[in-house]
Length: 183
Figure 1 (spheres, rainbow, N blue to C red):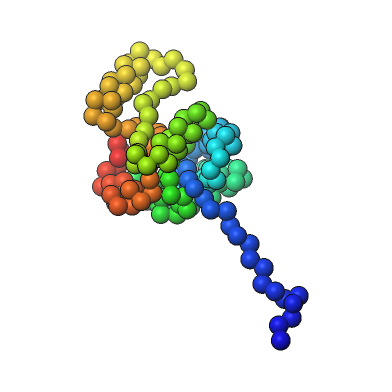
Figure 2 (figure 1 turned 180 degrees about the vertical axis):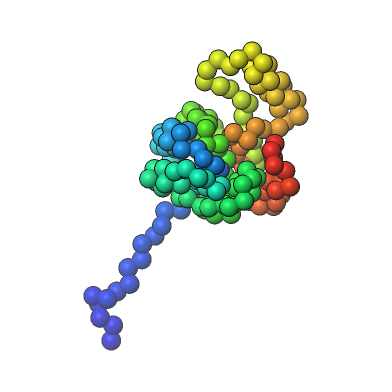
C-alpha cells in the first residue's frame, strides 16, 4: 500500500524557447551593463528565454558577475571565441539561439524582431550591422562603415549580434573552430 503523503510531486520546468549566448573573456567592466540591458529586452518578449555566459578562461570576476545576474555560466578553458560560442550553444536549451558579445547593448525591438523572424518559418538566421552609441574617431568610423558595406554586400553578420535556429546551427556544425576571428 502506498502512503498518500509520500506521493511524488513533479514540478514542470518551463520550456525555454530561446537562449542568449554571451562568450566572455575578462569582461567584468562591460558585462553588468550588457546583462542589465539584455534582461530589460527579454522582459518585453513573450517567449521564455535563458542567458548563458561562457567564461572563456577569464582572470577577473566575469563568471561571478554573470552568476549574480542570474545567467547560467559555463567554462571554456581554450581562449577562442568560436569555441566559446559553440560551448554555449551545446549547453543551450532554446530552439532559437542569439549570440551576443559581452560589450553589446541591444534594444528590446531588435531582440523582438530577431525572435519574430526565426519563428516565422521563413528565416533560419541573421544578424545586424554595426552601430556604435558614441561618435568614433575618423579612421574607426570609416572602418565600421566599410565593414557594414562588406556585410550588406556579402550577407555577412558581425559577431556582436547573430541569431539562428538551433537546429540549423547544429546541422551546419556551428562556428568554425579553426578560425580565431571573424568566425
